[in-house]
Length: 59
Ligand SMILES: [Zn+2]
Image (cartoon, rainbow, N blue to C red; front, side, top):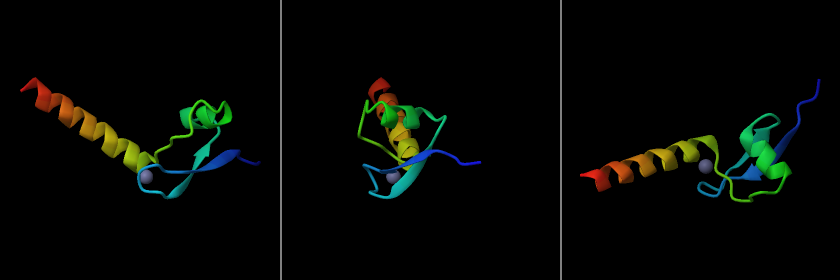
């Protein structure tokens, strides 16, 4: 069984990583909605930063 994936470059850490068929990013690549991609690690960091910034604004 073959698994479809695209190899993309993370915008943040410049590492290449794979997005597998069935994931949200795979759809975005396929439909060319976006060419700005982040690997899971960086995506997580960015989300945490966004939450932190949000909480800082609340204070
Ligand atoms: Zn990354």
